[in-house]
Image (cartoon, rainbow over all chains, first blue to last red):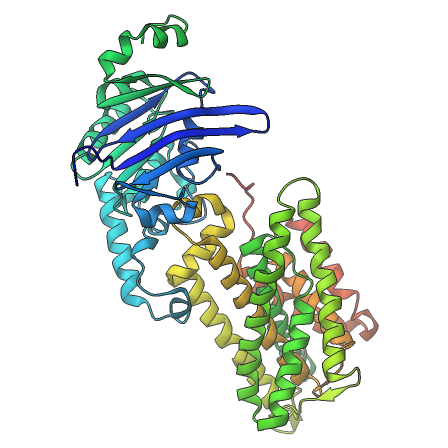
Amino acid sequence: MSTNTFLLEARGVSVSFGGLRALHDVHLQLNRNEVVGVIGPNGAGKTTLFNAICGLVTPDSGTFSFGGKEQAWPRTDELAGLGIARTLQGVGLFPDLTVLENVMIGAQRFAQTGLISASLGRNTRDEKELAERSMSALERVYAGALANRRANTLSYPDTKRVAIARALVSEPDVLMLDEPAGGLGPQDIEWMNGLIRNLTAKMSVLIVEHHMDVVMSVCDRLYVLNFGEVISSGTADVVRKDPAVIAAYLGTQV
Amino acid sequence: MIQFINTILIGFTSGAIYALMAMAIVLVWRSTRVINFAQAGLALASAYIGYQVVQSISNYWVALIIAMFAGAALSALIEIAFMRLLLKHTSSGPIASVAPIIATLGLLGIIKAGIAMIWGGQYVVVKPPLSNTGFSIGTHTLVFSPMKLAIVISVASLVLVFSLIFQKTNIGLALRASAFAPEIARLAGVKVDLVRTLGWALSGAAGAVAGLLLTSNGNGSFSPESMEFSLLLISGFIAAVIGGLESLVGAVIGGLVLGLVTSFVLMYISGSLFFIAPFVVLLIVLFIRPQGIIGVKVGRRA
């Protein structure tokens, strides 16, 4: 692969809801093993950009490339197969399932048996393998001990760990984290930063985040959105000094 | 004493059939959040398909299995060709929760009319394959017959297979997840549309077996207008609600409770209460435990 091909690239993305312009002509590029942050004030369109990449909203215009190949915007259920995994702001665990089952849901792309033969019960080996993969994903986020708990009995920081394990178990090339530090205390944020840095050995990470501490310390590059447009991009140092960014944050020190 | 035993055995047998119907209703509810009234039509159509097979190869058990697959196929077809489009067009607004249910009532009418067109409106008979004469204990003759025993065994095996699918397989996991939060399941790579179709197919299979076994619990005769099938739908629905509407185990427990209670009312109070008893059971359960016997008292979160 030549050096100027990006792992993931979205060009000229525009999204509108009714008459409201949520994103306008947004470009986003992600290299292999890179951590890229998308920041911006509330309502700037950060999550909408994530949703467009995930097929949860349909862009009015824009192109999508993955692995250097331009292709149609993926459907939501195609993402995992493509190698993209995402966590949600609201965590999104299935409360009635156990932690292990929650993670196994994320491992569907490794299920060998088809739906029909699976429903006839021909998948014992499959099950075992998925469970093992899920267990090691849980151990990676130090949540192995939680495997048999029901998801609705977990503490908030633990649900975040499990949500990340569910994303990791599909062994993605791109991990999309929607506010990974949201609602966490300083200690858990420190832990999350460490985890994200470790992950870059194997994958690229795309982060939407309010917490400047997280973004500034772990991201190689940043995109700053305001009113649906990219107003600045570059390394943390470049972005921090950009007058447009300072203005967007109403003069607060970023 | 013998009457007491008989009451339990009769209640257990009809309860088993209700349980199967309740499972069918729960499977559709879980996969698409629709109460499927067309289930009665599917069970009836499957019974007619069973009748057709018995006519040509005269083996009841093969017919039961073919009817089961036919029921699954019909139900899946309804989901793909009809419900999927309908749910897409009514995805929001107050109509969204009502339209699909009304639509299944319409489907019920269409299926019944279709059956009458193919097989005519008169009664047909699928002779129960085993004797309906009760077993004897000493000088006493029980109401429980070889046929009833076969019904209970058939239902028990199907319940066992379904529970294994639901609890132990990957597809069961996908079914449980998609029901709760389809978007999150999609993000995790679950083919939610396919899983929904499979939910309907499993439901159709359960309903089909319930339909044919229902006829064999009696003298084997039925017509498109048979009261038994409407009652089966109502009983199955009530059993599903008693069981909390979300759980297969709940559906089975709900079916058995309903079967036993109606049997006792019938034997010990009055036969004329037959139609009222299920509803009284439903109201009592809803008053005491609105979430159902198995139901969990939590709201759905996104």
